[in-house]
Image 1: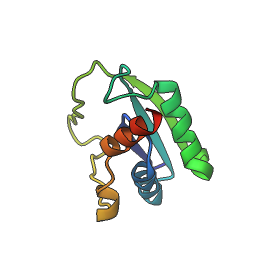
Image 2: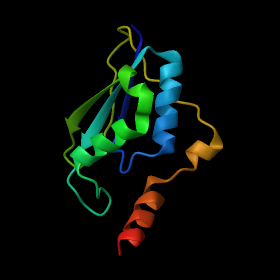
Image 3: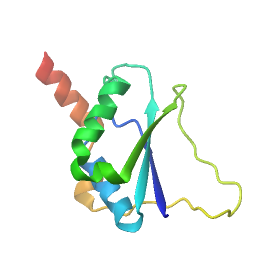
Image 4: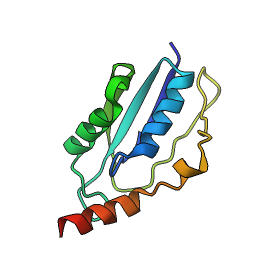
Length: 116
């Protein structure tokens, strides 16, 4: 079974993330989402439990083809390494400009403004 892997903080989960998952599922039977568990901060205001809930709510009927797991993040940048060709590859998603322009930073700032 062809599987796509999507890694992120999803702070917050937005239409760009969903579009990426939809694109992955066009090529793969399933998608594994690895949510980076980061300490709550100004840049990461959403607790991991709420991140997962928002992802599930945002996926709708795609949920049945998605598995969500959490990976511990020590607060540093994440780098994915590949040793040799062993049946998997790293592939960049080619997304439309309107999706690329979506900014989680702007979404977070707007959320903070709404709650003040």
